[in-house]
Image 1 (cartoon, rainbow, N blue to C red):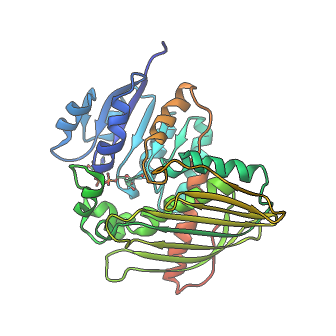
Image 2: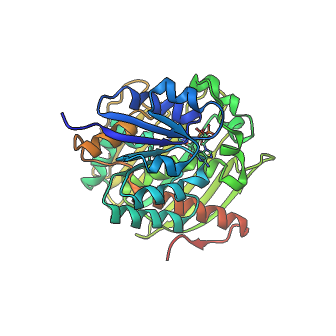
Amino acid sequence: MTAPVRLGAIGAGWWATSNHFPLFAARDDVELVGVCGLGPDLPAIRDRFGFGFATESADELFDAGLDAVVITTPHDLHHPLAARALDRGLHVLCEKPMTLHAAEAWDLAARAERAGTVFLVPYGWNYKPFTVAAKRMLEAGRIGEIQYALCHMASPTRGLFGSDPTHMLERWNSETAPDPTTWSSPARGGGYAHGQVTHSSALLFWLTGLRAATVAGRVMDAGAPVDLFDAGVVRFDNGALGSLSGAATLADGDKYQVDIRLFGTEGVLMIDVERERVTLSRYDGEREEVAIAEGEGEYECLEPPARFIDLITGAATENNSGVDVAARSVELIEALLRSSAAGGAEIRVHD
Ligand SMILES: NC(=O)c1ccc[n+]([C@@H]2O[C@H](COP(=O)([O-])OP(=O)(O)OC[C@H]3O[C@@H](n4cnc5c(N)ncnc54)[C@H](O)[C@@H]3O)[C@@H](O)[C@H]2O)c1
């Protein structure tokens, strides 16, 4: 057997301890070298998951001879930490939103290309069998060229973005509440667009290969510290038109909505995680429905960390959420927020 992947972790809060660390700790092809975070809980987290050491210094972790790093910090720290990791030639699992600004996102894309390492942003829906089936249909040209794309998401996250992160705990059955500033601080990139529309837009961009050219948008905080509602009119590089929609205020216990409807020159493909359906309707009369197991539409993020390790070891070859997909999501969301701040004017997403 080859040597295990020497993994370091930066950020050891709610998401890292409830999703990533149990998955990595259960694998015998991963060695948990060290964990970096802030606060008094860190030694207990080190012991619980079997990390070799705990530190508050990212430098100390980077100097520990790592192969790979998982970054699960607040959003605004993703770019500087991922840049440093890539410059050291490490494989990087970087949480969403990959960065808060387009320039930072494409900077990471350039560094990742130079490093030649695996870079994956854990977008759970990009790894579901039914979205993979939809992607294959699109790649086979089953709807022709995309002319219109609808991309909607809604989540039961009123508390998370409205400063009561304990609200999420019942749903996720986790013991550690996230620091409220991670999700609801404007200065740290909180809000529904960076926090959740990042998922639906990254799914859209991975599925279709589209890239946004311009956006005119409005976001609304409805009294919360950050945006709860997002709406945008998008033009894509290929000339297609699109509408982007996000709402943070589903009722507790309701299923997430991610609804992507793609209208092409030869037919229509609809992907709906809430109703768990993927349907293709071609203008020549052909129809196809993807069989989806009950509950498969629910959000979970088990496959992305596993795929990250498998890509490093060579056990897998397909990255469904690489740096380029994440960068196209970041640049759209940043432009949407800028457009809204400019009163809804249509602005360019990239040069
Ligand atoms: N992919 C997904 O489905 C998914 C789901 C939930 C959260 N996330 C992402 O995970 C990230 C963390 O979210 P969370 O809810 O766990 O937040 P959290 O507030 O619970 O955890 C943040 C962690 O970062 C650490 N940290 C803060 N500043 C640091 C610094 N300077 N150096 C080192 N560590 C530092 C904190 O000590 C804490 O351990 C966010 O980017 C979020 O968007 C992704």
